[in-house]
Length: 159
Image 1 (cartoon, rainbow, N blue to C red):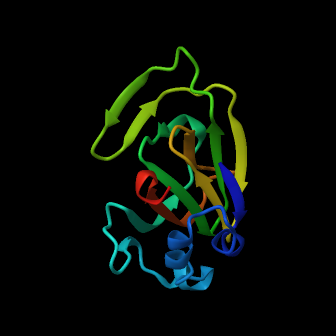
Image 2 (tube, rainbow, N blue to C red; image 1 turned 60 degrees about the vertical axis):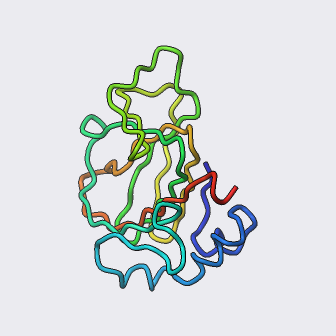
C-alpha cells in the first residue's frame, strides 16, 4: 500500500515509467471531467491497464465486503467526497474466502485481521498491491456521494 497525492505518484519512481507516462495524460481536473464509465488507454490492452470512473454512495462498514486481488494493482483516487478504506496485509490464518473469480481477479472475505484505516480526500491516490486485503467505499462520518477513479494495472505486465 502506498498513499500519495496523485500528482506526486505520477512523478515518482513508485510506478513503472510506462505506467507513469500513461497516467500523466490525466491531471486531477482531467479525471473530474470524465463521465462515469470504463476507459482504456490507446495502444494498451484494457486487460493490462484500465480506468473506471464511478459515482457511488459511501456506506457503513457492515454493508461492504473485504476483497483481495492476485493479478492487479488498484489505484483509488477520490474526485469529490471523502472515503474511508480499510487495509490489511495480514489475511489471518482463519480468514476464509466466501466468493472468488479468477477471471475478474477477486476474492471476497467477511473479516480482516490487523486492519488499518485510511481516509482519502480529493486528489489522494492509494495504491493497493496484489495480496492486500481492502474494504472500500466506507463512510467517514455519514453516508455521502463519492466520485472516484479506480485504475487497475496488471502486475505481471509492468513489474
